[in-house]
Length: 157
Image 1 (cartoon, helix red, strand yellow):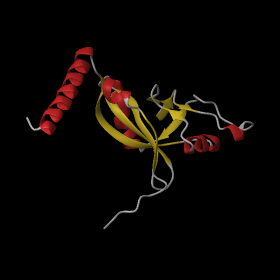
Image 2 (cartoon, helix red, strand yellow):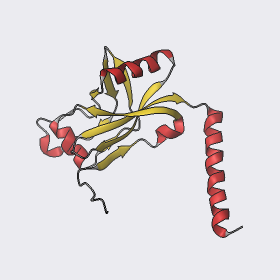
Image 3 (cartoon, one colour):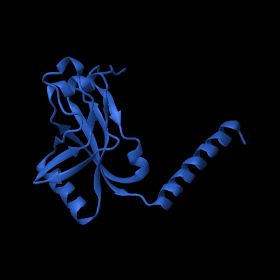
Image 4 (cartoon, one colour):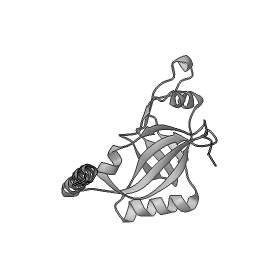
């Protein structure tokens, strides 16, 4: 059976640099509290989460430094572009995130922002550990070797 594509599901922005700079241990989906003008701006695809991060403060999860462009028709009741936004996760997940960042020296990085099947904005966040320079070099060398291996296999050698 052919599956119908849901028109509500849409990728807004992706943090491609996160997988290069960090070793992602675990990921989870979080909701995000937004204003109306922010959602309208996201619908037309004007956002950037590349320089943002998430942190647990006072028992709540916050997204910091995520850019959502101002929505021009809502100039009077607009929003700040880089304001802190609250993320919605379950208490159990929040406790796990807090313990990972406090004890194990990990950080929480946003991986992608998207609209789910119901049209709600979701943020995929990852619990990550920073890579050292030699780890980045090894990952890059492995990626280059896999490319070269694929070319050789394609040519039939």
